[in-house]
Length: 177
Image 1 (tube, rainbow, N blue to C red):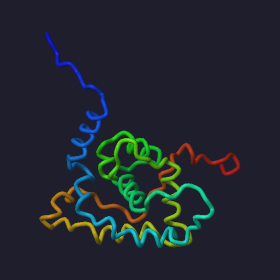
Image 2: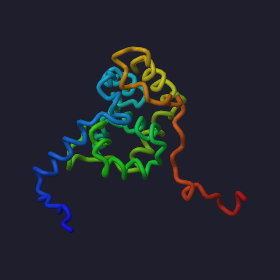
Image 3: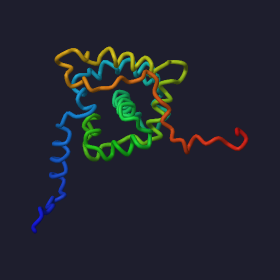
Image 4: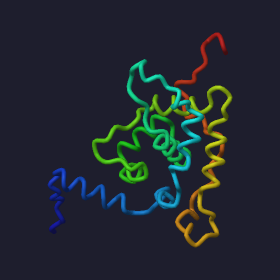
């Protein structure tokens, strides 16, 4: 018996074509990607995070775009992922890269960066996640709308972001037991 052989060349053009084809499919959370005005979250994100007050003279790398990072939290919540799993899935899944508008070779935040972003949202009693998810719900298309047909399978997202720290990192010390 003869079987079909995998003759993919593995060249850059073939990889990019595969990624483009995978990202064109509107499945899972990618169904709502084009229905949300993500930029409408920018001002509130920058206010909560204090990016406007950030002193550039202190050096260091500039932060990732806050809208991009919030979209990562949406992925994390939608798929119930830990910070580590989120990092791995963004690197591995074309659908995640498509949702985040990433291309092969773009910088991806690591698990610690995702954790720190979530912590900054809650710093100084700003209730950042509550505010952002409330705003997100307002700009999400209503499920009854014909334009929102794609969003109908989107589960409700809790306004509180779950602590995605792996249980192994949360072990109590002997003194706490």
